[in-house]
Structure formats: structure tokens, C-alpha cells
Length: 172
Image (cartoon, rainbow, N blue to C red; front, side, top):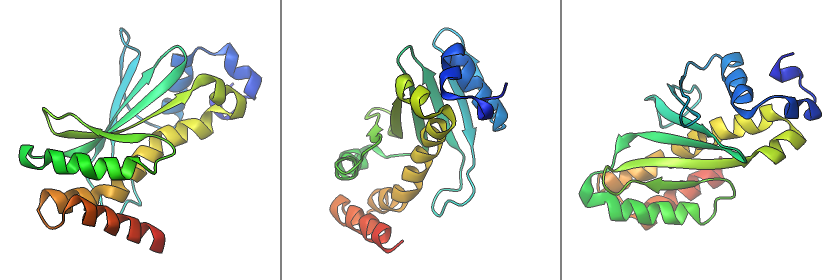
């Protein structure tokens, strides 16, 4: 029985790690699995993006109650721009329904994180939620990439960069 053919009540028969691994395998994602942490790491280039052409790194962390996804941007924020990028992320996060941006202030790595409860996945189907966990972070990375770059290159302050990102979104 494949994941695509699973009925909702069949999901409970599979353990969570196996469920995620099968989804990744069926969708041809090559990953490394860390058994001690139940983490799956991989990277990929996504077609159809406007602003991001470099590979995006992913970490899927399978936990008892939920599945945690983190997509890491393919750039590092310079030290002198980190506070301004934090302001931009706060502006973006304020309106997020699913997930949020965050940055490691020591390394300058920017991530988009999202978590999905297993109970919800079992109710409405694994595939739909796995797609959200995979593609929403990449979509958000693409949506805000120009704004992040404008702040990093000193082409705009965080407020202006955010306003431009929202304006573009409304025109799509």
C-alpha cells in the first residue's frame, strides 16, 4: 500500500518516521536520515520560483506529536544588517497563519519554520500536509527574497522592503 492510496484511518498503522520517509521516497527526494534525532536533511531546487534559484536546505524533524519543517535560505545576513532583517521578519511574521521566519543572530542564517500536528495529518490526509510542510517554506523564501536582498544591499529599509513585498503580493 502506498502513501497516495492510504485512507485516513490507515495512517495510524504506520509509524511517523516511516510515513515521512515513504512520502519523500515517492516524491524522489534524496535525503539523509539521522536516527538519533529522527531528522531528515536534504536540499533541492524548486522550479517556478521567481527570486530564488539556489538550492534550499531542508530539515524535517519527526517528533512524537508533530512534524517540524525548517527551510534554510541560501544566503547569510551580514552582521551589520541582522537587526534590520529581524525587523523585516517581524513585519512578515505578524501576518503569517502558518509558520514563521527566524534568524540565527550568530551565524546570520535565515530560516522559515512550520510545524504540523500528526493528529491533523491523520484526519485530513498526509500528502496534503506534507506538501504544505515542503512548499510553504520555499514559497515564503521566494516571496520575501527581494525584500531581504534590498535590506542587505542597503537599497531599502525594512519598512520599505516589506511594503514592496506586500504590494507585489497584492498584484499577483
